[in-house]
Amino acid sequence: MEDPLNNNSYGSNNMVLISRCQCNMTQMRTNIHSRALRRQARNESFGNRVLHCLSQVPCASLIAWIILLVGLGGLTGGLLIGIQKTRDLVDSQHLLWFLEYAVAGVVAGMFVFGTLLLCIGHISTDPTSRHIFHTTKRNLCAQGLNITMLIFSYMFGIAWVLMTAIFGIPLYLLINILMIQVNEINLVNYGLHDKSLAGSDFDNFRMEAYRLLVIYITIFVSSILITVSMIHFLIVISSNLTHLKDTRLATLNAYADHTEMQNSKHSVVDTTM
Image 1 (cartoon, rainbow, N blue to C red):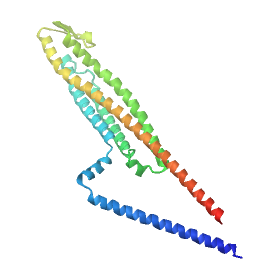
Image 2: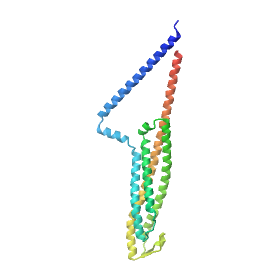
Image 3: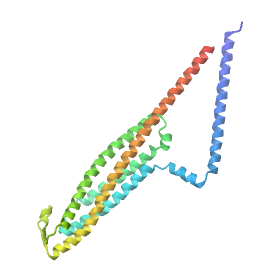
Image 4: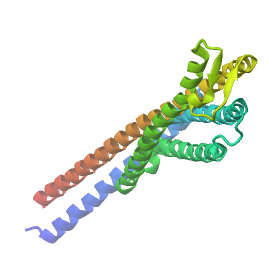
C-alpha cells in the first residue's frame, strides 16, 4: 500500500512545478510582446507617432480652455477700454470706479479655475487615467474630484449666464440711443446724471456711441464664449466621470472573475487529493 503522505508531497511538488512553468510561460509571452512593441515602435512612421502623441492630449479639455482664454482676453480688453470711453462720453470719471479691480480679480480667478479644470481633465482622460487611477481607492478619489469640479463648473456656468445678461443691458441701451430719431437727449432717462445733449454735442455723442457699440458687442460675445467654455467643461467632466465609473466596475468584475477562478482551482485540487 502507498503512503498517503508521499502522495500528498508528490502532488504538491507537481503543483509547484506547474505554477513555475506557468510563470515562465507568462514571462516569456510578456518579453515577446515587449520586443514586438519595440520593433513596432522602431518601424512606426512619423504620422503614426504624431497620432500617438495626439492620443495623449486631452483635446476636449484643451479646446474648452482655449475658448475660455479667448473669452477672458476679449472681456478684459473690452471692459477696460469700454468703461474708460463710457466715462469720457458721459463726463463722469467716477462711474463704476470699482470695475477695474473687479475685472482683474474675476479674470485671474477664472484663469486659475480653467487651468485647474484642464489639469484634472487631462489626468481623468483615458489613457492617462488608467496609469494614475488604476486602483479602487484612487478611482474613488478621482470620481470625488471630478464631482467637485462638476459642481463648481455648474455654479460658474450659471453665474456667467447672469453676467452675459448684465452685459447685454448697456448694449441694449446703446442700440436704443442710436435707433431713436431725435435731435436732443437727456442722459437722466438712461440712469445717468442730468445732462441734456443737443445739436453738435448730440452728433458727437452719437459718433462716440457707434464706437462704443463695437466694444460692448465684443464684451457680450466674450461673455458668451466664457459661458460656452463652462458648458464644454461640464460635458468633459461628465464624460470622464462616466468613464471612471465604468473602469471601476470593470476592475471589480475582473477581480471577481479572478477570485472565482482561483476558488475553482482550489476546489479541483481538493477533490484530487
